[in-house]
Amino acid sequence: MAALSPGDHIDHRGTPFTDDLLQQLLNALCDPTTGRRHVGDARFDGALFSGQAWFGGTLYSGGVAFSGATFSEGASFTDASFSGLAMFDGVNFAGSVGFASTSFSTARFNRASFLRFCNFQGASFSGAVGFADASFSSADFNGTAFEATAYFGRALFSGSAGFSHTTFLGPARFEEAAFSGNASFDSASFSGTIDFGGAVFSGTVGFREAQFVGTPLLGPLVCAGEVVLDGAVFQQPVRVEVAAPQVSCVRTRWLSTALVHLRHAELDLRDAIFEYPVVVAARPTPFPIPGSNASAPTTELPSQEPGVRLISISGVDAAHLVLHDIDLSACRFAGAVHLDQMRVDGWCTFATTPSRRRRLSLTWWSRRSTLVEEHHWRTQAHHPAPAAGWTPPPEGTSVLRPTALAALYRQLRKSLEDGKNEPDAADFYYGEMEMRRHDATRPRAERALLAAYWALSGYGLRATRALIWLLGAMTATVLALMLWGLPADEPKPTTIGRQVAVGQEVTWTTDTPDPVNPTGSLAERVTTERFEKALRVVINSVVFRSSGQDLTTVGTYTEMASRLAEPVLLSLAILAVRSRVKR
Image 1: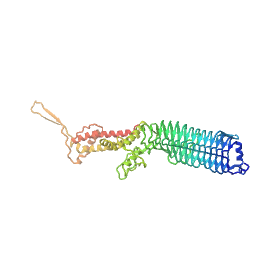
Image 2: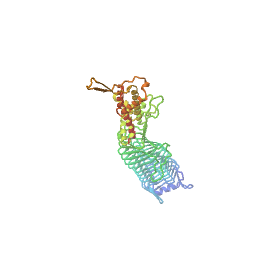
Image 3: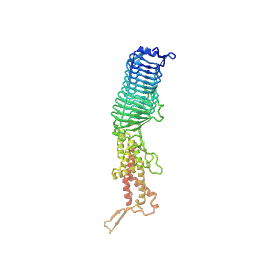
Image 4: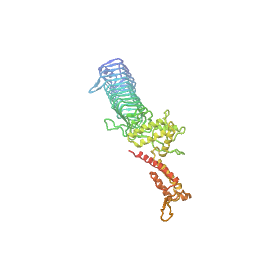
């Protein structure tokens, strides 16, 4: 030790250290000008530290290796600076450590600075460990076991951070931590609480195949990239709070009740498994940080509205799924089951038909809620010139046939009806009937009937269309009566009789002559008087009453036809209005 000077390299692989021996070694490397211990390359692989290991404030200008070392009484690297590689893989941190009047558990790396890659892969912390205010260039905690509290409050990860296959038996606290690169918690196991209050992720954060054994809260997690929960398992009731542009929950398993609050998110729930009710809701206000009056920061997020857009629930059993204030305009429902039992509450919006008429075309789409699968089908049905305004399917996406689309509309209509959302349920009934009308596998007679039903009243849901047809039918009836239905003159009863001799009975016969068809010019037939009579006949026909007006043969059959058709059109218009105002 007498030959050592600050900045020298040391190699003590496999060496057993007591507390006093370690301090003598480090004091020999103390720089008198700065009062700080300065070590070059340091090798402590497999070393055994039987006493309290105090490395606080040490400057390591070279590489450091503690691979496989054992700290039986804990260790402190507070304020240490690692300029080279820092290898702590396979280290066993046991017991507790104390220095002067301060005591803490197992290990402390508070305010430590790792300027290059640090490796804690496979390390074990039997007690609490602190990395408060530590800074990492690139960190690997894959396979690490934290048996008590793991505290990373205000830590800065300027590069990637790996926590894959890590075990957190106690609380995992990342309050106000900053992750500038990607962070991975894939296949990690969480048995305690996870606190990301005030933490910000600038890249992607992954929880693929993670196990949330006893986690009551995941979040509030703010991420500027994507949050990936694919294959994660939530075993206990949990509240998830995430603000991120994209959230992927493909193949997640929810083994208990859950409340998923999201902001600014595009959510994918393909093949997720819900064994208990799970509520997915949009949160309009920032998430509060637990134990603080502040809110989770949102500066890393895009500036769009904090709504939630669901992309897909394909392959999901939706019997336990509840959606609240979710944008469903791009959601694919194909492949989901029990959609009729799914709850759609709050302000949930669906895709709509094109709002503008295509130039040089007579097609005009009535405004209604639709499924994105219908958009995909209509673009394919009009291929190679798809209808304007309909959304084409993404590349590689299969397009459903009208039969399958009708089934989707029917199940979702039942769900909306159970939620007392009659207007949107009426739109889905319209969509179901549209798919039945376009289904080539149905009989032609049925499709013709549906086409007539659509043309006359929009399946009993378009009051304007039914009223236009009613007005047209009344106009045609009035014209027919004025031109051919009303007689030239009102036939007057005539009494005919003859007296043969005085004192004999006289027989009188009163009869009304047959109406005489009008034979005059159009100007003579189209008069105000004849219009008033024809209008009275038509109005009585609409309410299914007889006017009592004398008519010609043509007029009689015209009135019979109007008494059959016009009340039906009026009823369809009333039915359409009722579907829009029904509670």
